Length: 72
Ligand code: 9UX
Image: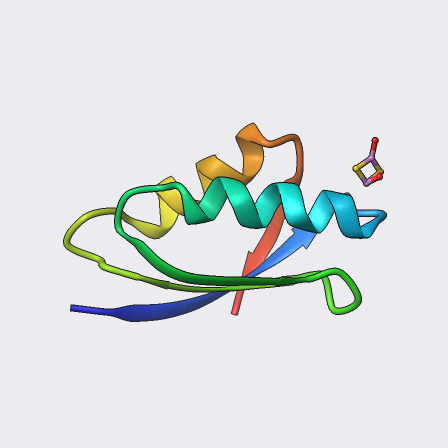
């Protein structure tokens, strides 16, 4: 099972910020693919919805110190 979501992420001001968010998501169980784009401030995530929810994905981002501004 796989779903794709795009999170709008706030507070990333450099490429290192984006890498931090990307790494945190990548090591989360149930996350299949992650791409965080600093310019668009969007994180595209493919994940298994039977393993984790969008709320949990948002929490991972929040715990890295950035904000989830919305879901697309
Ligand atoms: Mo992005 Mo930071 O710079 O200390 S990782 S602002």
